[in-house]
Image (cartoon, rainbow, N blue to C red; front, top):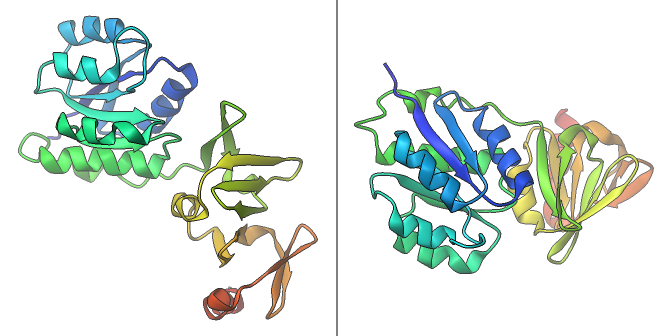
Length: 238
């Protein structure tokens, strides 16, 4: 019989807690005991409950995530969740299971939970098998100081502008700070196709194509030379 992973979420941003809750609820092997907005709330929870993993933000008021992690029982594992890359070394110095950068996709979170299970296989004998690939049909991106939910089905195409992306939806365009390669890794491969170093498009939204371009929402998007062979092969086989 498998053992449930009991966890808490600690983050001062309500939307960040909601995103993690939504992702974790898709994993049958994980049970959320509490969602806390600061370290003091978390202290009270872990003092009265058996907690296996804490999903912990670093940059919080009063007591930082790093200080909190140093003060708790070392048998409780930490998965850091933060928007700041610069704390990664400190996080791993504390023997954290993983270090997740916001915005956190379901796939990346699932990797972190799997990593925890791999490191605790003698305790969690069957839980790893329960981590079935329950893929989300949406993603959250940071834009205008908010985390915005985007359904995959709403995406027409994505354009890279260096370290920024423009995500074209039916009625609006969202700009987020992200590289196109990172975004490509978060999108379901069966639904999206990269045809250029600067463009990813939704396969379902393709209206027509030639050897030189693909038309989406009446826009002709160029197929680059380096992607042409694989793109045309996939399009012709659909």
